[in-house]
Amino acid sequence: MNPSFLPAHMVRLISGSDRKKLGIQTDGERMAKYRASTRSALTKQVVQYLQLRGIEVCWAATHKKSTMTKGWPDITFAVKAGGFCMPCAYEVKFGADTLSREQNDRIERMKSSPNCWRVRIISSFIQVVDDMRELGL
Image 1 (spheres, helix red, strand yellow):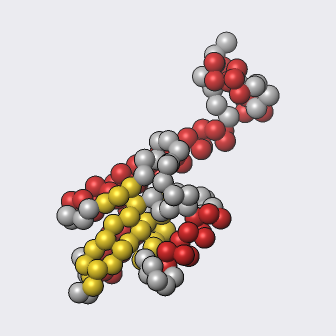
Image 2 (cartoon, rainbow, N blue to C red; image 1 turned 45 degrees about the vertical axis):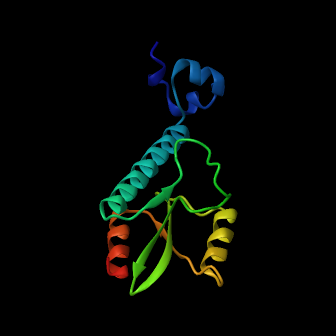
């Protein structure tokens, strides 16, 4: 029997280790994998776009647990906009993903004085293009 033909309610009854051996996933596991791959693809697209514009970018790998400061945004860079140097950060979220408490706290501290970072939550490539236009870049 092909395990991929099992109905969702039956798949949930199989232990995680057995599902892994059989190569099957629950709907939730499949959706989490899809969100992670889409988020990773969006992050790569944003980084490439910024680099093409000559902007030096620092970003965290999305395929493994980050060793960066807890809650730190996914992409950071600095630009000169309006004659002033401006530190910028993008936190990439996809679909129904929301900020964790650590991310929210970190972003609020980054935005406030004396730090004054420009932080944006990005869920589509168009938002990045619009943000660059807003900066005059």
